[in-house]
Image (tube, rainbow, N blue to C red):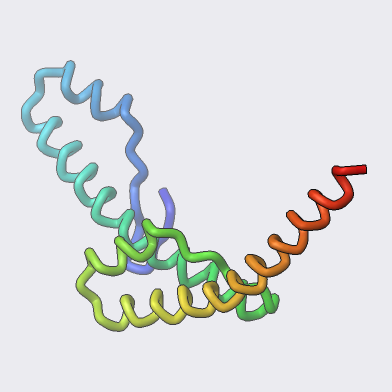
Length: 118
């Protein structure tokens, strides 16, 4: 059991779900179904919190954290404007670094081509 911002979260594994299914006990199936749904609902919260944690690590370490498409899609899916703004700021921060990486990579490719001819 892990403690979350909204209380404890029981992590269910497939075995518990399969066992409930095989048991034929409808009450047990409903209970496991409810627990599994609560767990799945908490996953979005964990994803959002992890994105925030990575961004804070990036700010404190001076290294921007890459924002992946799934984080952007997740922010959109939540409908939370503040969350979307936060992910947008993180993405913009990362994209600034991307231009520097792109320029350096171009130089690296040129150097590989130059040295590789010898």
